[in-house]
Image (cartoon, rainbow, N blue to C red; front, side):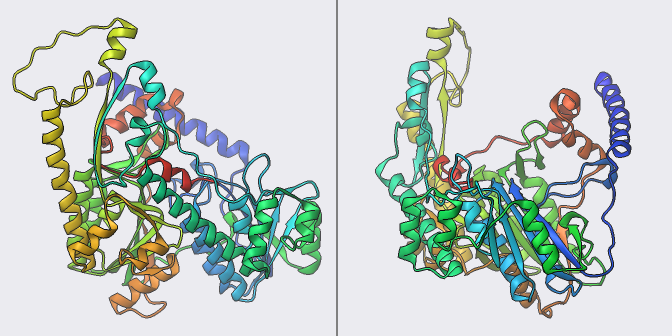
Length: 572
C-alpha cells in the first residue's frame, strides 16, 4: 500500500508537470469572447458521447472532444444569438448511432428555422466504407457540398453479427447459457453459428425500420420521392458528379472554395470554432433548476465511472443512485431529465437503480430521454419515470433475461495440459465455476431464478407504464424495438430529444418554457480521478488500478442487449 501511495504522489506530480509543459507548448487557450457578426464552424465526426464532465482544471487538459449535450447547448444559443449569421459544418467519418444522428439533425434544422443558414461540407460520404450515416446527417443542412473526388456511398444498411461458436468448438470451450424470452439472443454470439429465426426476425424489423426512416428523411430534405431515393441507394456508390446530377448534393468544391464562398456571402463576419463559441455556456444562476443526468454505459454494481484502460463507461448502482438521492433532496432542482444510453448489464444493479428513480419520482418529475440505446437494463431503470421520450431510431425494449458462462475445462486440460484438483462442500458449490458447463439440475435451478427475474421485470414495466401484464408480455420476450415502434406499443410516451425532454420536465414541474437553469450531472471529476482517467496505461497504470479498486465495479449480468443490435449503434 505504501508503494502504491508513493507511486500515486510521484505520478501526480509528474502529470502536473507534463500538463503544464503541454499547456505552454500548445498555446492552449480559453474560449475567446468575440464581438461583431460571426460564422460558427462545427466539425462532426468520430465518437459522440452524450456527455462527459469537464476536467477539474480546464487548462490541464487538451481541448475536450465534442459531446452531444455541449452541441445541443451551443446550437440552442446560436438560434437566439443575433451575432451569428450562419453555421458551417464539416462532416467527417462518424462513430455514433441512429438516435444521436437524429438529434443532431433536429438541432441543425432548428438553427435553419431560426433564420440562420447551415452549410455542410463532405470530403466524402464514406471512403471505402458505408457513408449512409454521414449523408443522413448532411441532409439536415441548408446546402451540401462534396469534394470533386468524393463519393456518395449511400449504400443502405448492413448489420453483420459475429458468432464465435465455431471458434469456441475449436478451442474446446463450452458455452453454457440460459435465456428467458425467445428474442433474448445476447448469448447467441457464443452458442450459435448464425441467427436463430426469432433473433433474425427482430433484427430485420429494426434494420427495416431504420431504412424507412432514412429514406423518408432524405426524400423530404432533398425534395425527392421515396422510391427515387431507394433507387439511388441501389445504384450507389455515386461519384460527385452523379450525386450532383441526382440532386443529392448542391455543389462540388474543395474545402478552400467552400470557405471562400461562405466568406463572400457573409462578408465582414469573423469565423469561430464551436469550441470557442462563448454563447453556449450554461446558465447556472437562479433559485430553480432542471437537472439533466447522464447515465451512459453498462449497468454495474458499485460506483461506476470510466475504465482508465478501455475508456468504457459504466453506470454504477451506488454512484448514480446516490446522485439521484441527492437531487431528490435538493429543493432547487424542480425536475430531473435522465438521459439513458445503455444496453443493460446487471439485473440486480438495474433493479436497485429503478428503485432510486421511483423514489425520486415521488418527490419531483423524472423524464427519461433515450439516446442510441435504452434497452434491457437500460429500459428497466427508465420504466417508472414520469414520462419517457425516445428518438425514432433509439433501440429499446429487450425485456428479457440471459445469463451463463463459458466453460474452459476442456480447453485447459486437452490443449494446455492444465489440471486442477478441487475440494468443496455443498451440492452446488462450484455452480459458477468456469471449468465445466451447467448440469441439468443446475440449469433447472438457474432457469427458475431467471424466470423470477423476468417476472419482476414484467411487473416493473407494467406498473411504471400503467399497462396490463398481458400487454407487456406481448412486447417482451427480449424483443428489441425502435423508439418509433416502442411508442406504438406503449413503452415510450413520445418521440423527441433534448428540447422535448426539457420542455416536458418543465411542464410537469409547473415551470415556464424558459424558466429554471439547466444543470448537467455528474459534475466535474475530482483532480486525481481526472488524472487517472486521462493517462495512457503505460503512464497511469498504478492510478488506473487504484481507481478500479475504489470503483469496485462488477461485470455485466443478466440484462444485456444482444451483440447484433449493438452493431447498429455504430456507423452503417
